[in-house]
Figure 1 (spheres, rainbow, N blue to C red):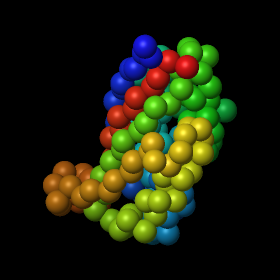
Figure 2 (cartoon, rainbow, N blue to C red; figure 1 turned 30 degrees about the vertical axis):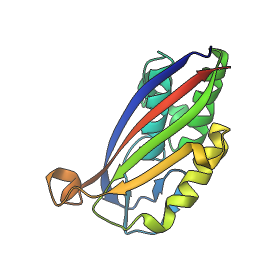
Figure 3 (cartoon, rainbow, N blue to C red; figure 1 turned 180 degrees about the vertical axis):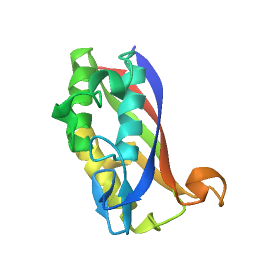
Figure 4 (cartoon, helix red, strand yellow; figure 1 turned 60 degrees about the vertical axis):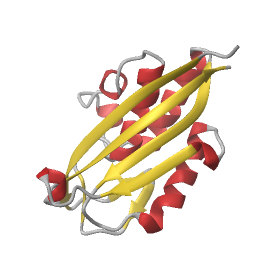
Length: 160
């Protein structure tokens, strides 16, 4: 019988002018982007944290600290690829991902399939194993006021 493990992930970044908006490895046309040390892809960061949690490997800050210049401006898909390697080293593979991006705007629906495809490729799974949804915060808090974007993810990993 296979061993299954689950993990959850969360990330939030402020929106600022002068940065590209990257979510799920996809550049989305918008007047603002997410502020952070890497490309600040909150969706991919939440997926990383969910996978790391499922494998009991800590969080993204432990593996890719913002105090390390190697990660300045790094593609979060590259970070995710490293997380997948760590999962494999522990004898697991990705089972599935379910993620939610929370943002008032821009409208993310036109980019969801591309996000799923990019994430699935790095996760080494078929797209049917990656769910990405977009929700708003109905005008509430910093996300609702358009000051930030957040993402939640749940991951299941399976013994190889």
